[in-house]
Length: 360
Image (cartoon, rainbow, N blue to C red):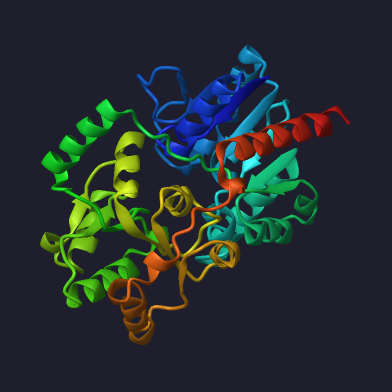
């Protein structure tokens, strides 16, 4: 089966999806904006504004040339929008914020604009998938018939353990570049973009620092820009944390997560991201914001729910986690539904469902 992935190649989940599909025997093509000089990726050109996603002809040309069996688009109102005019079966991955935030925040005209785009893509898609039931429900609120064609399953990919030689190289590199030595780190893995709630991240870090815990806190920049970083640096004492100011590769992420005791993921919207599951699969204890997808996850898996960010809640968190080591008592690894074989089967089933619908 030939799959055309249309999505941001800078995203680790897109790169891993490509890799694991190829490993599973698929013929894979990837198209992305801002992909000049990236081997094996068709460059859609520099994305200068949102309206670049209206360049339907670019996708149509690729589809006509390569004749994929399925087009797999990512982010409903971005690459999903680019793919609505091509003729092949269309699978769209719902990323959470595109469904939950874009169409429900801001002024009337902005909300109407995104609701219209979301509805058009939801109508066109032959199959949808997301990691959270509440995202699927919101999609069906925006277009009722979405409920009949959405698959809900976690579709991130576990980090592969590096060989011993690479582990040693990574260990030396992380120590030299960031001062990472040993383990028991408290990691904020999601980055400093607005959707990942940097103001509350800063508040939690200040609480942890007040408790006398410093130089064990690791914050990832993620895809945040320099303005986001500057704002964040004005809220905390950056000298008391370890700030990872670039994207980490898979070996580096594996090393970091394997040596963390707690990871804290508190976005304002999320389906169920790799920033929760990837560290948990390596034994790190998740501390999560009060989102429907996270509450559902914690019904069957170990972790800690921050119901809100009041001083009372954060003080309780410090006692439960940082002082009493609550996380040591229950660090069970998430179940089989998060392993690679299960995830790849669900993706394969979604592709075949899209093809079957198109045939009808």
